[in-house]
Amino acid sequence: MSDDGVALSDKLRRGALFSQACPSREILKHLTSRWGVLVLMALLERDHRFSDLRRKVDGVSEKMLAQTLQTLEADGFVNRHSYPVVPPRVSYSLTPIGQEVAVKVRDFADWIEVNIGRILTARGDASQARAEAAGAGTIRQP
Image (cartoon, rainbow, N blue to C red; front, side, top):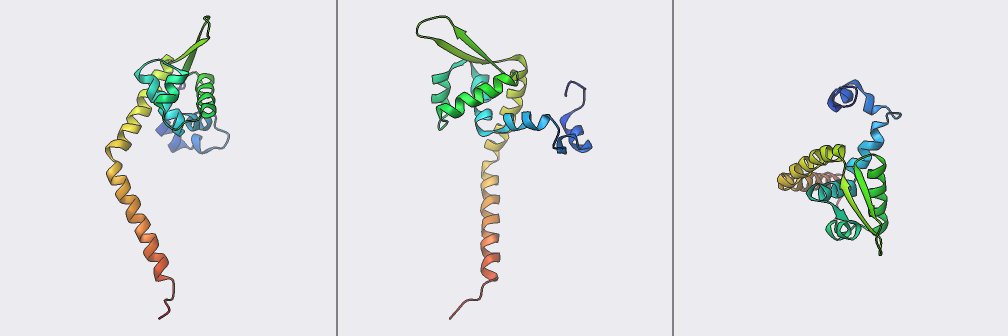
Protein backbone atom coordinates (compact mmCIF):
# COMPACT_ATOMS: atom_id res chain seq x y z
CA MET A 1 0.00 0.00 0.00
CA SER A 2 1.16 3.50 -0.76
CA ASP A 3 0.96 6.41 1.67
CA ASP A 4 -2.50 7.14 0.32
CA GLY A 5 -3.55 3.56 1.14
CA VAL A 6 -3.95 2.53 -2.49
CA ALA A 7 -2.26 -0.66 -3.71
CA LEU A 8 0.02 -0.59 -6.74
CA SER A 9 -2.28 -2.98 -8.61
CA ASP A 10 -5.19 -0.57 -8.03
CA LYS A 11 -3.09 2.34 -9.29
CA LEU A 12 -2.21 0.33 -12.39
CA ARG A 13 -5.89 -0.31 -13.04
CA ARG A 14 -6.57 3.41 -12.63
CA GLY A 15 -3.62 4.26 -14.86
CA ALA A 16 -1.55 6.39 -12.45
CA LEU A 17 1.66 4.48 -13.20
CA PHE A 18 0.95 4.64 -16.90
CA SER A 19 1.23 8.42 -16.75
CA GLN A 20 4.65 9.71 -17.78
CA ALA A 21 4.51 12.25 -14.94
CA CYS A 22 3.95 9.63 -12.23
CA PRO A 23 6.83 9.81 -9.68
CA SER A 24 6.38 6.12 -8.89
CA ARG A 25 7.93 5.23 -12.24
CA GLU A 26 11.37 6.41 -11.18
CA ILE A 27 11.24 4.40 -7.94
CA LEU A 28 10.00 1.36 -9.85
CA LYS A 29 12.99 1.70 -12.17
CA HIS A 30 15.41 1.86 -9.23
CA LEU A 31 13.91 -1.16 -7.48
CA THR A 32 13.69 -3.37 -10.54
CA SER A 33 17.07 -2.60 -12.07
CA ARG A 34 19.39 -5.58 -12.21
CA TRP A 35 21.83 -4.10 -9.69
CA GLY A 36 19.10 -2.65 -7.48
CA VAL A 37 17.48 -6.05 -7.05
CA LEU A 38 20.77 -7.78 -6.26
CA VAL A 39 21.95 -5.10 -3.81
CA LEU A 40 18.63 -5.16 -1.95
CA MET A 41 18.76 -8.95 -1.72
CA ALA A 42 22.36 -8.91 -0.47
CA LEU A 43 21.55 -6.30 2.19
CA LEU A 44 18.49 -8.30 3.25
CA GLU A 45 20.90 -11.03 4.37
CA ARG A 46 23.09 -8.67 6.42
CA ASP A 47 24.91 -5.33 6.42
CA HIS A 48 27.81 -5.12 3.96
CA ARG A 49 30.83 -2.99 3.35
CA PHE A 50 31.28 -1.71 -0.20
CA SER A 51 33.99 -4.23 -1.05
CA ASP A 52 31.88 -7.08 0.36
CA LEU A 53 28.95 -6.03 -1.81
CA ARG A 54 31.18 -5.80 -4.85
CA ARG A 55 32.33 -9.40 -4.30
CA LYS A 56 28.81 -10.60 -3.51
CA VAL A 57 27.18 -9.00 -6.57
CA ASP A 58 29.33 -10.64 -9.20
CA GLY A 59 29.76 -8.61 -12.38
CA VAL A 60 28.85 -5.17 -11.05
CA SER A 61 31.42 -2.46 -11.71
CA GLU A 62 32.59 -0.21 -8.90
CA LYS A 63 30.92 2.75 -10.63
CA MET A 64 27.55 0.99 -11.05
CA LEU A 65 27.57 -0.28 -7.47
CA ALA A 66 28.32 3.21 -6.16
CA GLN A 67 25.53 4.70 -8.31
CA THR A 68 23.06 2.02 -7.24
CA LEU A 69 23.85 2.51 -3.55
CA GLN A 70 23.55 6.30 -3.88
CA THR A 71 20.20 5.97 -5.65
CA LEU A 72 18.80 3.50 -3.12
CA GLU A 73 20.05 5.71 -0.30
CA ALA A 74 18.42 8.80 -1.86
CA ASP A 75 15.15 6.86 -2.17
CA GLY A 76 15.32 6.00 1.54
CA PHE A 77 15.91 2.26 1.15
CA VAL A 78 19.57 2.08 2.19
CA ASN A 79 21.53 3.56 5.10
CA ARG A 80 25.17 4.47 4.65
CA HIS A 81 27.18 4.24 7.88
CA SER A 82 30.55 5.99 7.90
CA TYR A 83 32.88 5.19 10.80
CA PRO A 84 35.50 7.75 11.91
CA VAL A 85 38.47 5.42 11.70
CA VAL A 86 41.66 5.25 9.68
CA PRO A 87 41.45 3.89 7.07
CA PRO A 88 37.84 5.05 6.51
CA ARG A 89 35.20 2.35 6.92
CA VAL A 90 31.71 2.51 5.42
CA SER A 91 28.94 -0.05 5.65
CA TYR A 92 25.48 -0.26 4.13
CA SER A 93 22.24 -1.57 5.59
CA LEU A 94 18.56 -1.47 4.80
CA THR A 95 16.22 1.07 6.34
CA PRO A 96 12.87 -0.22 7.66
CA ILE A 97 11.18 0.64 4.35
CA GLY A 98 14.16 -0.90 2.55
CA GLN A 99 13.58 -4.13 4.50
CA GLU A 100 9.94 -4.17 3.35
CA VAL A 101 10.73 -3.65 -0.30
CA ALA A 102 13.70 -6.05 -0.24
CA VAL A 103 11.37 -8.85 0.87
CA LYS A 104 9.09 -8.12 -2.09
CA VAL A 105 12.04 -8.00 -4.49
CA ARG A 106 13.37 -11.28 -3.06
CA ASP A 107 9.96 -12.91 -3.59
CA PHE A 108 10.02 -11.74 -7.20
CA ALA A 109 13.56 -13.05 -7.73
CA ASP A 110 12.61 -16.34 -6.03
CA TRP A 111 9.68 -16.73 -8.43
CA ILE A 112 12.08 -16.29 -11.36
CA GLU A 113 14.46 -18.92 -9.95
CA VAL A 114 11.64 -21.42 -9.36
CA ASN A 115 10.27 -20.88 -12.87
CA ILE A 116 13.51 -20.47 -14.82
CA GLY A 117 13.01 -23.78 -16.65
CA ARG A 118 9.56 -22.75 -17.87
CA ILE A 119 10.84 -19.32 -18.85
CA LEU A 120 13.78 -20.71 -20.83
CA THR A 121 11.51 -23.23 -22.56
CA ALA A 122 9.09 -20.46 -23.54
CA ARG A 123 12.01 -18.34 -24.77
CA GLY A 124 13.27 -21.24 -26.90
CA ASP A 125 9.79 -21.92 -28.29
CA ALA A 126 9.35 -18.27 -29.25
CA SER A 127 12.78 -18.17 -30.88
CA GLN A 128 12.04 -21.32 -32.86
CA ALA A 129 8.66 -19.94 -33.99
CA ARG A 130 10.33 -16.72 -35.21
CA ALA A 131 12.96 -18.72 -37.09
CA GLU A 132 10.30 -20.89 -38.74
CA ALA A 133 8.23 -17.83 -39.66
CA ALA A 134 11.28 -16.15 -41.18
CA GLY A 135 12.12 -19.31 -43.12
CA ALA A 136 8.60 -19.61 -44.50
CA GLY A 137 8.83 -16.12 -45.96
CA THR A 138 11.91 -16.79 -48.04
CA ILE A 139 12.15 -18.44 -51.41
CA ARG A 140 14.64 -21.25 -51.49
CA GLN A 141 16.83 -21.68 -54.52
CA PRO A 142 17.50 -25.24 -55.77
